[in-house]
Length: 402
Image 1 (cartoon, rainbow, N blue to C red):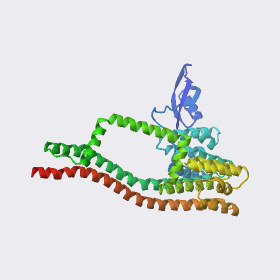
Image 2 (image 1 turned 45 degrees about the vertical axis):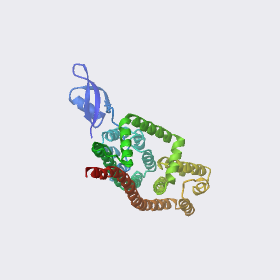
Image 3 (image 1 turned 30 degrees about the vertical axis):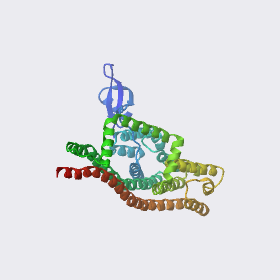
Image 4 (image 1 turned 135 degrees about the vertical axis):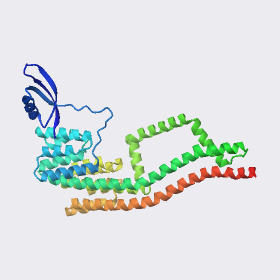
């Protein structure tokens, strides 16, 4: 695929001219300019001016899985890396990703390694993915590593998709219920309240409370928004700090049902990541350091850090986890111990990851079956109170009319 270049050149009269031209590389630019009667003096890749509000979004698990699989297949056929990157760049719908791949292609064509070139774009390519590419280049098993990563990220994408799908329905129910409640409070109830006042019907306590709450919101909407925004900002800053984040992550792990689900997701990711890194030739210490960054929970990351310190001292992985882990399940620790004793830690970790994936699927089904009735009961209670506040005065109104 052609890349945009900027050039400066002299024409036949010796006058300096400049402009842009598309070509595969700088040599082709020079050739095209000479064919047009110019004598190039400087050729550089054009600088891409990024839109002010465009954010470079890191590739998600599904995109990394597809990228790894496609790159691995092309490399296995003997296609040069530069050509592979050119083809992959042309397939990208995202302009930032496309431009990043073109820059990687240029760097690789200039003699840099693939991992070295990818590492220049941390906002696009995950750090662990780049580390694995480096392992593949060093060991000469890049195609095999890409295949492992394709399967790893595909599993991660499926897990995320299952969680998203399971939580979509409750979110939709809550959203529709909130709209219905707002419509009754701010549209239906005021109309009925005016009618009741015209007939001199005294509103019941429930109705007066709902009306008072609505009036308070209307009269103090700016103050309410300021208080809510300040509270949200304060909580966000607190939970982004070390103490707040640790407190929140520890609390999440202890919430009934939810904590169980989160734990299984975390330890599935831990086991599969450690298996991938360790079997690819990365040392246990470096593998654990990478796991600390991807588990997504400070408490679990602290446990992994303690285990990594123990491994650095010459211990196995299971022993420091037994001694000082706060969040690791005993079953997982014992499975790791068995893997170390038998010399099949990688296989044990893969089996553990598969086990937790199945557990996550079952837990999601159970959690959904519990959450849906609870949400319906709570929302039903709220709607019942609001509807009651409307219909109770209607009985008094009927009596007045009669």
